[in-house]
Length: 186
Image (cartoon, rainbow, N blue to C red):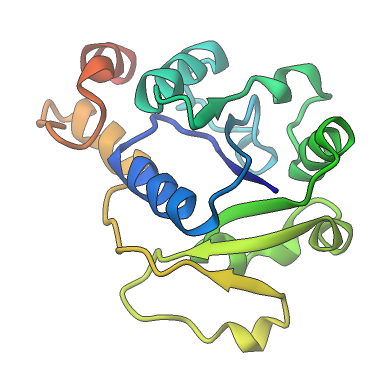
């Protein structure tokens, strides 16, 4: 079984790191992929996204351990980056079940994802907390595993906004990327 944790990672932060650790411990996958999107379909017009190569580098610094594999697979696929295409590539190559790690917010709008009806048949959804109260997912009729993880109230948007205002981001991202992140979003 492989786990896929995709996202914009603009920038990757300590919340991403903690969620990945919880998911790894719970699922114990053969492979755990961290996959930054080249150009996320829902953010096509967002000029505030750092270049892909930089976000890929940041992910490698945020997830340096061998158990996490930061993958550039989406750079080999058509743009925009669709999760379905990424999952299909991984399944073809590894011939293993795919567990897709997403936040509660993503589950709520999963029906807007590219070919979501097909994607749901290709993966097992693993959902982590994004809200202080657990949502009632039975209304969504999507099979999923709820990861009992802590609520991490840090977001990439919050980090970018703090940098723009000249505020500290100490402890919010990996120490190795702090200066690069500050220089990127100032």
